[in-house]
Every structure is written in structure tokens, then in C-alpha cells.
Length: 285
Image (cartoon, rainbow, N blue to C red):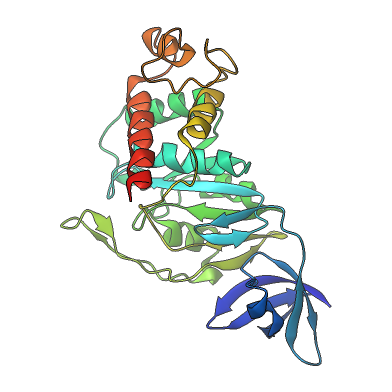
């Protein structure tokens, strides 16, 4: 039989096949082969022995959160508590581009917004990047019905730091999900972790992955790959004089020219430079 891994608890996998959930163990040979099923995997299993016998080829694979075969990433940021982070947004977007997975942005807690220009500024930035943004309030229900349509018939992974309202968003989309909601700690400047595991929740002939919140994401790439993704975000394909341009000190750099002409916001470029510094720091340890 064949099914989809929707959850993992200890070493027991919950696998859905034809609407029935089976709780299965992996075959012992997997350990010797140093492989293991993960949430999102399509697997074959022996119903008599209640064991997973093989893992089908993965279309996509994320290491953090660890999940396979997703068709889109939804970056979830809050407008406040915690405050919208342009740096994290860029990092998550680069992460999605690195894995060739389409990404959209949901900005939560708009009922708490005190900055009248915030939404238009984010919309303008997303328009430049080709990212579709949605602004909503799970508390008031604003734009919830609009957002629901983007999840139908897809396997979606939500990513964002703790406290941005991923669980509240899921409960607003479908109250039967009954996800535990954390609190935001203004003293610590972050949310309290509530989601401890990756789990696929069925919705409109697709699945939504609720994932643990995280703000620390180490990009596993070379600076040249980051540079390529950044100029690709702004449709500056092969526009730099040097093919290995990192958009830092090089002359005739299309990215820096775009900054001078205000086609790329300086704030976004500063976030890019910070990502470059992070990659350098990873190499030192």
C-alpha cells in the first residue's frame, strides 16, 4: 500500500492512505542505510507487518523544518509583536528560492498596526520581488476568507518565527485544527514555542504543515549562490559585468546601480549584506 506521512511521534509514523490513518514503524533496514521517512514523504508500507517498506523519490526536501514534497512556502510575519522583520523575510525568501519552491507572504496582527504606511511599503517591496502578500487579522477575521483560497489542493509549509501567529492563523482557517496558541513575550522580544513538531493538517484537498517557529535559520549555500538569488529576485539576470559578482565592492555591478536609481531599496540591500556576513561567520566555525 502507498500513503502520505502526515506526522511523526517518537519512532511511529502516521500515514494516510485512502482516508485511513495507519500508525507504522520504519523497517529496520532503514537504520543501516542511514535513511528515515519524514513528514511529507510518500511511502509504501506492509499493512500486515505495519511497517514502512520504502520511501518514494522526493520532489522537494527542506532540512528546517524537516519536510518533503511541499508545493509552496507561506512566510508568516506579524506586523508587530514581534515587529515585521525585513531581514527574516529576505532570509526565508532566499531559502524558498534555493529549493525552487514558490513563496507567498502573510502578515498577521494587522488590527494592532499603528503605522499607516506599513502595509503599502510591504506591498511595494513584494511587488518588486514578485511575491504575493496578504494582510490579515486572525482576531477580527479580516481577509481570512481571501487567504483560505491559497491553500486549496496544495501541500503548504508555514514558516516564521515564534509568536507571529501561525497557530492562530490555522485556527482561523479551520477551527477544527485546534492548534495551541502561544503568547508573545515583550520582555524577551519573541514568542513562546507551542508547536513542537511538524504536522500536516488536511485542508481543501491539500495539506497545511504547521511547523515549530524559528528565527535562527542557517542558509547552507555559498556566497556566489546567495548573490545569484538576490539579483534574480530583482530580474537582473546576468546584468553585472562580472559573472561572479557578489554585489559588494565590484565595479559595474547591476545591483548597486539599481540601488542608486532606487529600484532596489537600500534597506533590502543592507539585509543582503548582513546575510553575506552570516555566511562568512558560518565558515569560521
